[in-house]
Length: 489
Ligand SMILES: *Cc1c(COP(=O)(O)O)cnc(C)c1O
Image 1: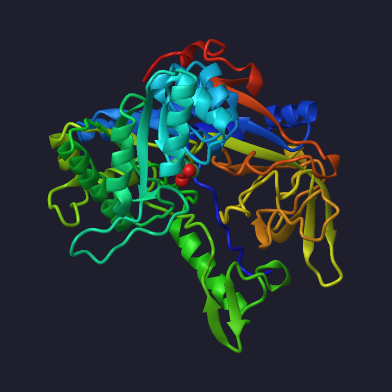
Image 2: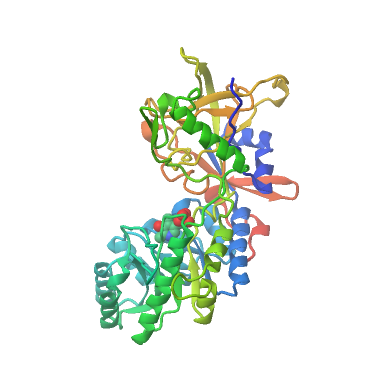
């Protein structure tokens, strides 16, 4: 076989310790079935503390709000409530869950497309509401007036930012009101001054580009000036999510892999993917076309370090560091990290059912799980699973690495857990587990469903206690379950 092209996951100490606990993981899957999701509430507290640390470095106040849509877990959300965190909810169900987890309304913000029930409960309980459009503002004020609700606390979600004299524009978004229409929006806010209170403005941009986010943040600073000039008193700028995760341990592996993938698409080396799948690239008579549609899995500046980098940017046209401008105006900074707060907080386990060789010589490893249970591929995150042998003693010392395709438990040609060849350090055997690390952000339960009446993964919370691990069902986890976890950070 060719040299194996590994894409080894980055494992922090806690997740690494869990992955090394093979007998525990086999017991869990033995008792609760495959697939199985494990979440690590202690880790999300650590991640929150790191984001808080960046606020402190820049002497900024405000909230770090976990974007709930990244994971449905109760344990993670309850842990954050106990740790003094905050949460961003994007549906009626998420809002109910957050309230039930112990968050007070001042630490909840509602975003996204909203139905009337979601708007009503948000206004009834007094959580912050991100207003997506003038029509939504009308709808909210009508609810407040009709049901005599308390004055709703609102933030205006803006989009379409530009900066004078600067070429960078922010990308198009389906969400938010164009900043060019802010004036009209503020007229509606003023007209309904008895029904709504303007907390601030914000954006959420799905991009890795720091310069685009700097334009958006500066646009918010300008928008705040405009509000103040009109006599309104907003104090919050919400810069949304999108801080990213560094999934891979080794940047060279990533560079080598993407180079070889390109070579494979061009036919210059043996295939690396199932049926010439190109992840967005294609071979047009010897010329490479398209663009690699993958998550940049090796990101040296991610999570709280990315936030630090954004705050340290110069404002594109106002001049001065963005953090300084925020501080001088005494604005509170809200951030809404989803993926980044869930970094290192989860592991998805799947049992190997069968290993077979096709007529053309490919090795297929069939798992007791499907592509919707393990969303890494769907989210463009290429990262190797970890082999957790059933019987460590029986592993032959001379076992060779093997390139395999992982297939799922649905009766569907397209149910491939990976469309790329995954290199394992040795051939797996039925009964082994594959552990997919770092799945808690979007890759664990976002798409899982009951197709073919296959089971949806159960979820357990696991925490370190001394040298060992303890666990319970996710639903059963409360911060008092784990006394070490009940403190605010
Ligand atoms: C999805 C989303 C987030 C979280 O984004 P990440 O990339 O996971 O950090 C935050 N805010 C809003 C409004 C979102 O829709």
